[in-house]
Length: 196
Image 1: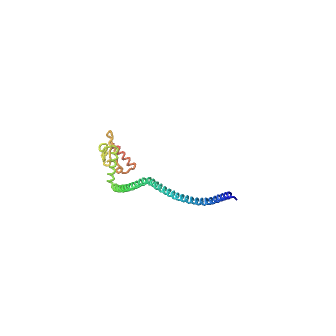
Image 2: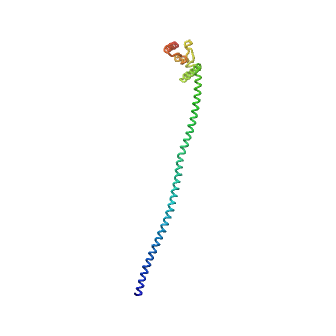
Image 3: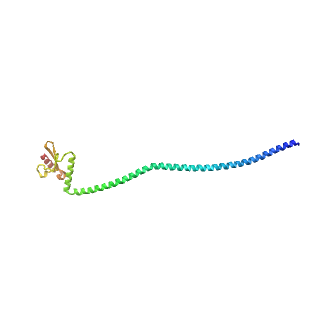
């Protein structure tokens, strides 16, 4: 073998051996780089995931606060109105109770007064006077109370109403009429006709 051939052969073997070593070294480096890149990717993913979770939690908390404020803004006026209505209802109930108590007292007094025949008569006369005046008649002009009809003592009506043409109508209240049977009614009609 000539030195030129041996050199060429040495060069080719060296080149092949260098290529094999370089390939082996490159693969080892590639595996190291792959591990390095996997580690970096895992670290970035973990930090990104943690940041994403923190951001989601913060967003959820802000939304909950905002929603709570909106609900509070909607509910507070309704609650205040309800409280006012409850206070008003309690006050109305108290006033109603007072009025019922006052009415019960007045009813008791009225029962005591109407238990007396003389007072019952005066009460009836007052209500008859009020009803006639409410109809637009004037006392001593359009009607006279306790006037004697026909000069008879038993013919004294509670009121005599003056009519046009010097006519008049006598009206006796229920307490003065006594018996309301048909015979009594007939006798009263006859007395009334004579008085006119």
